[in-house]
Length: 104
Image 1 (cartoon, helix red, strand yellow):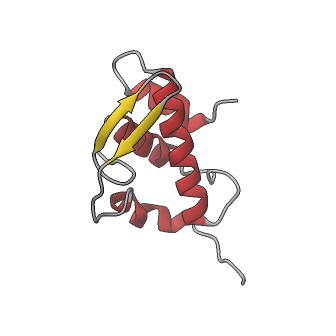
Image 2: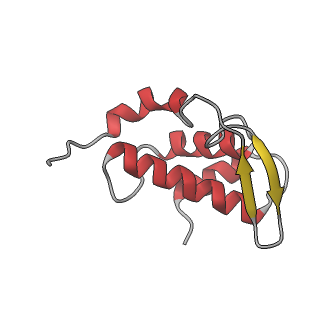
């Protein structure tokens, strides 16, 4: 089942999407937001930010681990070059509003 942020992201993309790559990017965005915010799902109210993150990674503006070194479509695989930056660091400040306190 697709989440709302994925539909919003589809509306922002002007061309037809590569479904396998789009699903990979959407899962990465969702997992990043959940881990960063300490939630089990993308927090309500953050859907537009999540959609912008998805479009950004889909368009290869922000990539997990660096620039794409190779992309294989059969059995889908992506290899990245290393870079020193965090993958969605430009969005972290806006995600802070959705963070939950974690008890250890």
